[in-house]
Length: 213
Image 1: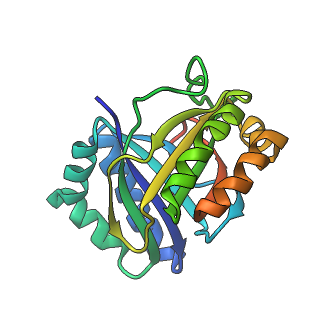
Image 2: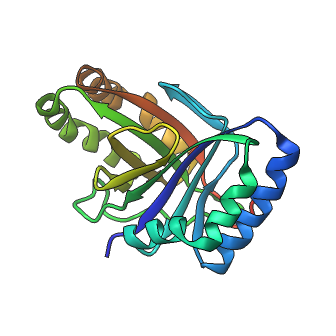
C-alpha cells in the first residue's frame, strides 16, 4: 500500500507561542508512530514561492494521514498553533510506480541524512508536461533519485496549495543539489517550465533526532 504524507510549509510569526504547538505536535506524531522525513532545517529555495519552515511526515497510507489530521486529538494540537504561524498543509499520496533508480537511497541517519526535493506544481500544458517526464527521470537516475510522491491524490487542508505534489529522495543533500544543477536536468527543466509552474526547494532530511520545537 502506498504511504501517505503531510506536506507542510510554514512561516512562524510568533515563535514563543509556536513552541507550545510544536512540542504538542511532536508528541502527537510520536504517539501515532508517524515518521518525520523532513523536520525544518536549512534549505535551498530554487523555484516559486517559499515558506521558511518545511516538514514532511510519513503515514502508513493516504487515508491514515487524512484520518490523523481530522482526529479530535490533532484538532486540539492544531488549535495551539493559533495565530503563531501561517501554514500550507496538504495530505498527499505516496508513489508506488516505476522508479528512475534501481533502489531507494538509504534512510537518513544522524551522520548521513538524505536530501530531498519538495515540489508543488500547477500544470499548464498536460501534454507537454508528460512529454518532459522521461528526460526528468533520466536526470534523477544519474544521482540516485527516488520518488516518494509523484502526483497522486492530494487534499489541501490549510492555506494555499498546488494541484500536483512531488517528493524526490536522494542519498544526500549534495546529490540532490548536483542533480538539480546538472546539464541533463537543466535541459529537462527548460521543457517543464513551459508546461508547469510551481515551487521547489532542496532540503536535508530529518536525521533521527527528536525534532526541535
